[in-house]
Length: 305
Image (cartoon, rainbow, N blue to C red; front, side, top):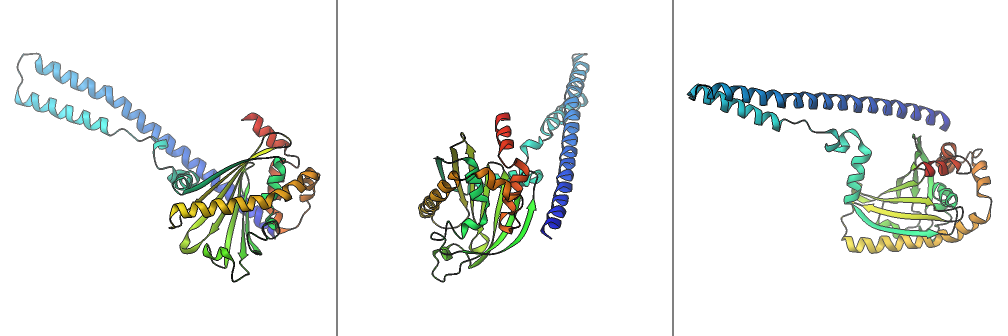
């Protein structure tokens, strides 16, 4: 059932990407055509102004009609200069590329940044971030026994995938209730082999978005960047303090687990994931499908960059 859904959504997304690409090429073609016509018009208008000026001053006398013609030609030339077509790259990026438009909006809502160099293989971090079960186990304390109720949707994308899952704040005294409703649908998105987004809805259609950037430094270390964004109407300094504390607490909980992962054969876990039928591993399986069980394709991408 999930495989059929994944194929259908992948097919729809592929068609959408093709349509978007064709539409973008069409707009680029029209933009180039407009720019070409505009550039040809400049020397044409200059030739017209020069020709009328030479004709008007040929007899050493300017009539009212000649003055009117010169002023009219000059006016249309100046108007032509103001009609320069806009370059698509200067237009609102959200019209043709919604993701870039969202990125611009995210920058306006940036709350905190954290950076760490962790003495664990990069693949350990990927396995940890894409395995939904860690929210119930590794972060049992900080999330106060949060439960994953169900996987509501999974969509593979060209470079990753999106998984949506419903979570429940089981305890009535859970501190997270100040952020969100007891039951919400959370999005976990694999954008690239290095970028993972966690999007959590809060009250009044507002969200907290956490973006993880993980980069391998060598076989034993990786660099982790954590960026948090929010459109909550709370005082920003207070919100920043709370988010810094929450981020540090969850990272502190991660360390023993990452250490344990580093001591096992992480590549074997990657290979075994291909046969896993657990819904909470769908996004991790997608990573393995795209970038290999040993991360060799990730290294290849990194070398190319």
